[in-house]
Image 1 (tube, rainbow, N blue to C red):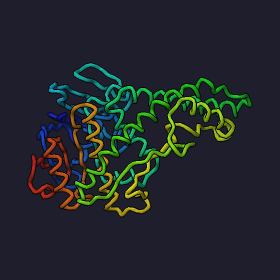
Image 2 (image 1 turned 60 degrees about the vertical axis):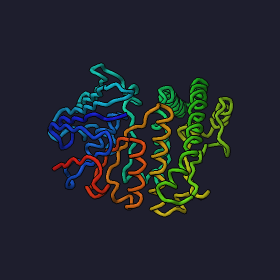
Image 3 (image 1 turned 180 degrees about the horizontal axis):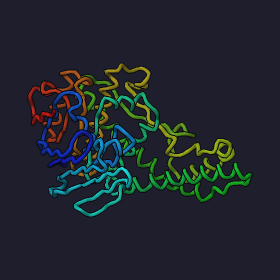
Image 4 (image 1 turned 90 degrees about the vertical axis):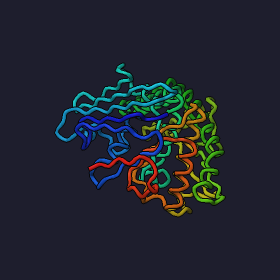
Length: 354
């Protein structure tokens, strides 16, 4: 998969800007405030329909403008297609594929990307929802059914929580059977797919870690499930657990079990890296996981996604950058990077901003 061109109209600091990245490495350089990260953000947005910097689309639209447009031409399977996302301040966003309107859930998996930013350290140190999102987005890019089941499960949890709140207000016993059934059915599929994906990544991560560091440290991912020491994904177990927790859930008006409550733990030589790993080890572990994510997507789709690296100069030392560049070059992975020209010793296409 390759990005052929990116055009931004009234987006962030750009009035009308177009760039055609190299099929290999492209380095965006320039002073702070010149818009380097804005380009990475726009490409990521075209891939996922969300910004990694803000929850408000209005912040992406140019200052003083009422609308903004992101246009990405990309090649997938030797076919060039165009994603157009039109953002407005008052009417939300509209998404088009080759001028045909599509829904946001149809966007995922069209233009596949993997993102690495300085904030990725929160994958290890941050809240469980960040780790769930990492895994959910990875699988959703290769499995439309997974994203459908994820949305179905999310809606069922919201409806169940709403029924619990209404019951508390009215004093009536909530009817939870229908929501328990929907949650259990979706949860069974979601957890099974998560476990399968983690199993695949655990076969790839150690090799990536060794390649980046030269160390033979054992890096792995463990799935942590609410309600069970050993992860379960049979529907009957979910139904039994949801039924057993109804009294407690009614007290707090939330659903205390399901894929939305699970977590990931990253282990280095069997120890939790969030507690026992240095910051350097944590950064390298995350990059190893991101490269493993790329391998997973390639195995599932036949093509590597586009790699987006924002401001990694402060995250990786020279030897790790050299090891990373070697891997990306060998595998012919299109990579778009923000930083300084010296970062990859003059390799690739340089685009100066500002």
